[in-house]
Image (cartoon, rainbow, N blue to C red; front, side, top):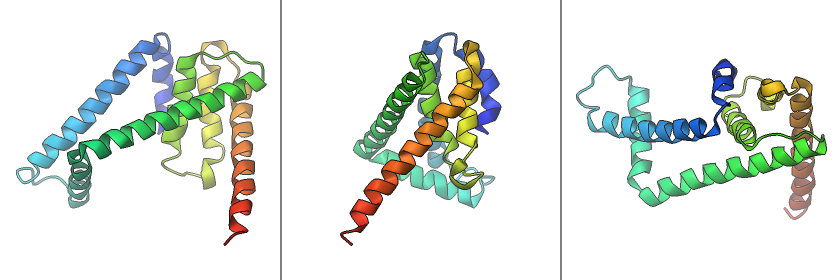
Length: 169
């Protein structure tokens, strides 16, 4: 699904402010639509029960404004930290990359990790990073290798800290 949006995102990379405006607009529209669907759900009989239950649960979270702000802040923080990791990985390959592409890579890898097509989305996230890095004259193989190095580093850190923490169980 994420790969389908990449050709359209290529046009938006010209101006990074457009991405920020679209993101904020999408967040506002999403929260507003969930609120309105929850408020008028009893009048809309065509909504499937699972979607109605999902909307009800999300609206319960939105009611708690402190929790909602905390979730949004954590999502932004995770993406910023992910962008820093990708920046360092691209620097390791001596490749200069713009901040808007880093933020786009961070957001798309987060979104692509929501639905696993392969175990751990091996190959999917590498393809996403490769395609985004190939826009504006970059190389696909550099993005693919950067994501592979990031994946191996995450694996090594997980194994090292995991084995250290399981020793005390």
